[in-house]
Image (cartoon, rainbow over all chains, first blue to last red):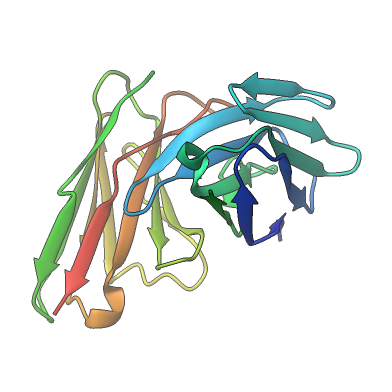
Length: 110
Length: 116
């Protein structure tokens, strides 16, 4: 059974500081996704990582994938309040259906 | 990007009644659609996978007679919660995938179901 674990589950961030969320998965993956979810809303796609060593960046967020370690990271640079949300990683495994991580709730404080 | 429309965005129903949620792909044909349920402060749990013209595949522990899924066309899938109970109250999210395995799925806006 595919398992996807994220840590931390909750992250209180100070503005302008850097943080990293970790996503570990248990089986060989086709691709790894990162999503953002605001309270009461659906998912917003952030990144799709397709291969070992893939790195993608958008604004203050950068995601990377290490398939050998079965690890993806989401790095936040110089956090700002707008980034407060819950972030999920998800991967498809071999069954082509998404399995989501536990989620990481980010809260940026002044 | 591709648009998936889910309706209604919220619904309140009485215990024992049924409620239908629609998921439409607006600008692409969806070979496969997925239905998820999300309880407060938890992750998304896949309920079932539906392919157009065939029966849905339900995840372990999901009652197929309670959560009826119909994928009658390449642009529409419906989830009907039958004989709803308060414990069915949740956030339901659909996603639709344009092609075969390997293409990204796009998410609907979600439906907040409250059973009173």
